[in-house]
Image 1 (cartoon, rainbow, N blue to C red):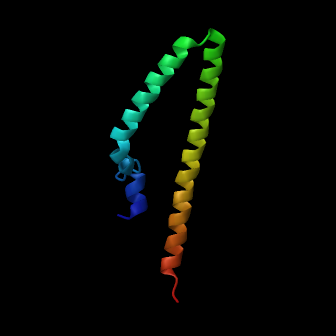
Image 2: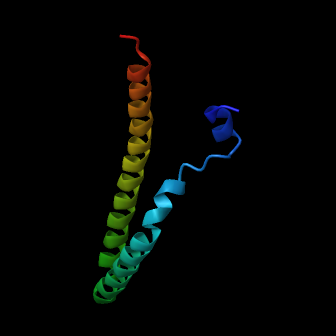
Image 3: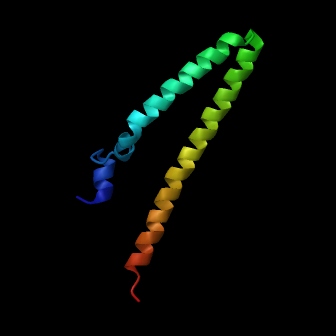
Length: 88
């Protein structure tokens, strides 16, 4: 079976390599959640709404960045494959 077939069948997990950072990520997520809770407790209802909109925009920007990084990784890999298979 080739790599594309393995990928299609779900035998390759593209997220597997990111799990090594899960512990660090979860620690930072905990810090972020605590800081957000402290901040929200000091804000008015309207300010909390604005903060939520800001957080939503940031989440969307991060998602866009992750999709772009994912696609760029594939493009770079393809370029490398083309380069290494060229006969000189």
